[in-house]
Length: 243
Image 1: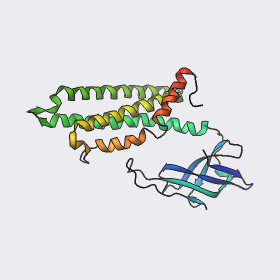
Image 2: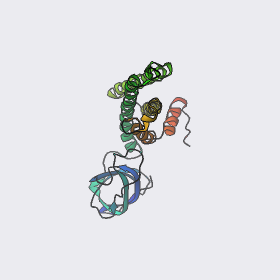
Image 3: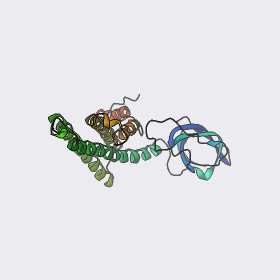
Image 4: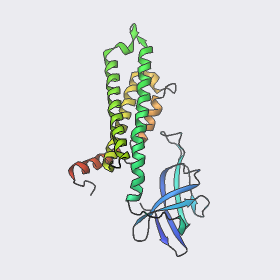
């Protein structure tokens, strides 16, 4: 949170930069979290075309390649005062957005895992070796049984969390647990499924390698795997390991 803005009387003056912003190269509007002169976090709406605002694209990504990613650079950008988001300030404002994103990820990761499982299951029934489908071998069945078990557990976790959200009872720590667990589950299933397909698993004919590369990003965005671990640790112990 090094991006800052100053009150210049008729407008705010914004300086700083943000990295790894989805849709940055072509988005017309950016919601920017920055600190005022007192160090308090506020949200500002920055519009394309404002002088000093640029959005260079990030190239050579090996993950989430279908998503356009870039930076937001603010060099003495004059932001109208009416572009300050009202009613909410402090760290709780952006974290409220993160809770919703993290909850969505807990479901999205399940979808990737389901596709990897389904691909491995169909392949095991079709691929023959030593006179029978490889799905008839015990180790392959072990992998598939463990995959569907972990997927089912993740579905139940996300479903229960959704019920709590509908009741207004879901906590940030519970959402962190679901995001961390479900993404970890998905990336492990993607790696296991890749092995089950052998060399075919690395080809573009199947979706597994694409999921594997994308999940490498998901495991760190919207809060890294380790940060969510510490959020859960704080929740169960009451002791803050962040300081």
